[in-house]
Length: 239
Length: 300
Image (cartoon, rainbow over all chains, first blue to last red):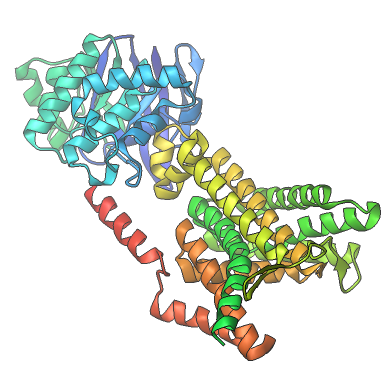
């Protein structure tokens, strides 16, 4: 479904990502883990055209989408880090924005599905996004992405700044989405939750892919901490 | 004297509605692009001269002249957008402003070259008899100006609140990053907003030219100054503020013109601008809007 080959991203002179490759098959969940500054967000942003790739190639369903802006990507939606909502828009308007240029019937059908998944948004359709709590804003950002009816959903730190119960709720929703067959690329600092949920992982450090494979066992996962904290000087695959 | 004040207020509201349209045009562009297009007035001037040319060459009536004014303003604005905004990175606001100033000079020189005379005739609405309501007179061209501006503002309100394009414009003005991550074609929306502002400015330019009945190339400078002053008085970035700023400017100018004469009017106008900058830097409507936005962004 998604294939990233030798992708490199630079921010000025800083190399944020170097020759990172990955593949995701339909229905799969890939967790991208790493410390702050490891290149996780740069990877997600380069996949969906928000960051310019210096080199490398991104293909989605066989189509080369390298550097294409998000509005040209049919089938991919993003839930960005920090949620990034327009505070003056209402919940209903934010959902409508996410739907793209669809007709009224398609919009209504899609919104009904999203509201069935997030009933808390249904009672707040006229409320401005800027007045929502952190948990509600996260659900809205997730709902906005789902309004595009994506086949691949890119999630950048969806639990950032949330309470443990709100973070659990997010993972519960992600579990439902996975059960519905949606393909997920999940960037998450909460490595234990991410690895407990994903099918496979990709570990980044200083912009390099230093590990990848099937989701590790609990014992293997403990070695991730070593790699993340920089104690693994060899850069070997922790699993 | 009270009657004079009432009469001046009515006249001021009419001309102020056109100022409001100019300020709304500025505000739309500033809201979406975070950059000031000071070639907005000269773009409108190009449209007005296109209408005047059609009128002088073919004795064209009001509707063809109106359409030519809009077409000229839209084409000139599209040129400004491509050269001074689309071609210059989004965060280089000063470069865009300097570039739009250069385009201003270019457009003005081009018009002066093609129309070397001092003034040119523009079809006017003044042939319609004046309306008399009790002790107050309503000039038909002022009434037409006010009603057209009101209708256009209602149409703009409908576009911004009821259409997909309007939703994208409001998102871009509120948080450009939110527009990008939501899959909005930001460049296209910005370009179309530029053209929408040109249509609004073109209508304002037509109304003003049709009221005066004659035009000079300085009308570009005049439109830029009036629009910018009204925008600053009302509050930078607020459409509501732009309209209020235009109406306030129109009424204050009409009173000053009557009681102090033309020179006094200009002094009062710039004093009003100075007072607005010093005492209400966020404008008449900008303070509340800015406060609400800051609070909302903090929560998100």
